Image (cartoon, rainbow, N blue to C red; front, side):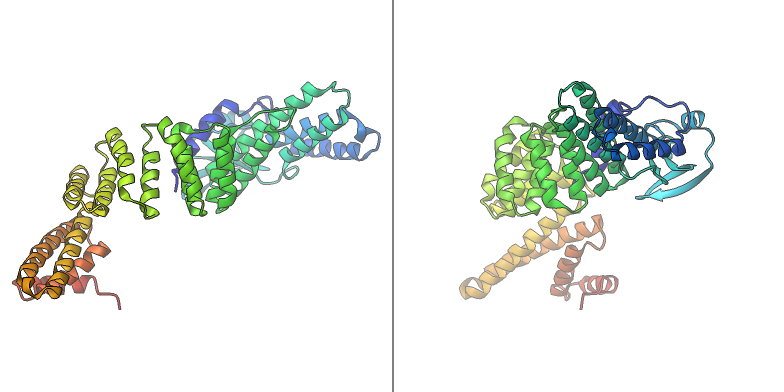
Length: 437
């Protein structure tokens, strides 16, 4: 549906601005054993009636859990080069080559944490192998919430708010990392919790970027209703991304059967982004997919072409719309122009072949129904079929084995099998592309 690499690139841009807010830069490997002991002490404190009722206990716990979350990535930032990691963390215990989601990585094994470096020797992400505790950022959020509930006199409000803001940033970074790994379920969990933390009264931050990418993560995980919810939240709170967010919302809404709601969102925003091609195409898609009058789609398509006149795909779609309107001359011009711009694009040439073939079939039908004009209509049909044959053969040159083209050629070679060379063409086609049984 959507361009995942482009979206991840944007997340990495945001990540570069926020990563590392929660913790101080490290100059040595974290001591996981020491952190585990500190957490065990914290567990005892919160279980104690007196200490568990103290704001400071929960503030300390929140900060400790932040430190643990940072340790789970060795405090390494994506984008660091391998040499820097080794300088800071020392030589890894081992290095392994792996493939994750069709991407090749070198894995630097650092005991509790594996660090993944891409082929350009820059760090892509880290994975904790032996965590101190599961989900430390959620636990940190809970700790700060508990501190806030105990801070009746509001003396620690700023410190609690600062902690919550750090947790929010770290959750966003975690979501971005999972998104880049293709772990969309985990990405959605982290980004949604980041949004929730932002909505806490002490933080009061509306992170539309996190909302939007939480929606995308849920979509890629196959959770389309949840995806639509977060995409709508992002739009309602002002996230537009030059109109692309609206197009994403339209696509998901269409898939979950809420296309009329999506159309309303398109109509209310399309004039705000006159150069955004995907908005125009979404409107065209609406009118065509819903069987509406194609004339209503044409103005949006013309605007998209005006902004991108050498786009073969747009001209192809224009040909489809004009064809539906009955303007075959206009459709032929659009299809021809599309092919001129992109000669290896088979669809416009194939569509011309289909157009002439269908017109030939219609002329045959008229010949059968009107005996007085039989010869006239059959001559028309013959001319149209020969035009279809010419375009179908051209389509076959562009893309050998194109399924629809093979069907047209098989039909027309058979029809004209008595003509010189046609039977040989039919035999060759049948041998290479046997008809489905």
